[in-house]
Length: 338
Image 1 (cartoon, rainbow, N blue to C red):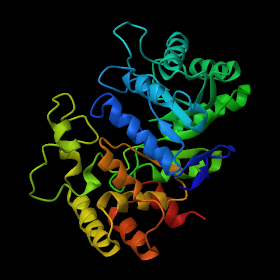
Image 2: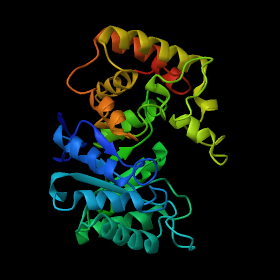
Image 3: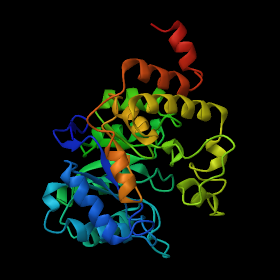
């Protein structure tokens, strides 16, 4: 396992980050223990969780806390705040009240004195950004948090947050966590240059496109009943809204991506998932993709992406087949700008 600096910090994190959204949901505690043991065995030191993960809020954190007890210092641990953790009116959001309650609850569940990277899980328009950032700065000063991160922000809101922090001398975000994969490249025009200019690392969630890039999904083929997308389709509340829904993924371009991936996978003797992860690892802008396996077999398959790389020609093929249509103002700037 290789290690990368997180943005402009001196913090080194493994080239893969272990996601724990499945812990306490599809993945039971014993399997979670085995996963973290295996991840550490191959050199992984980067674990991502959130207070909203699990079949009930906080369950994923509880499991991670049990597993890391006695070896907490071996890992760079993240968690997040914003989504509901209870039924109360203040059990969500980015108010001072909720953030301060949420960090203490997360520390207790994770059985630790500090969080390495504390993320705002999603931009919340209801709370003044200045209030949230002031509270987060105090968490760093108190020692409960080491670094700050943002996830699921618009580019202008992320830049505004950095500007506010700089103006008042507060701790700024050092990491951005967006969705990014061969079938979701929308962040590139804005966030790649923004994060490079401002010194933020990028940790990508859903690098397999919600499982679409695993090789299980082909045109005209029935969804495997045990697949992630199939399970999402059964949930009425997610059928239309989920980023991972079959309706959103089953496009002509995405099936062309799968076709090219299949050719490369056969030539390389690798799985579809390993091809997708290898493509992301080759992006200099990306610090680490987050692998979110449900089973040990899936984890082993994901870990198979390390120790080798795609050729320049293969990367070019995947870049071209997955590229987004250029849109204004980038089309104009690329044609007429200096």
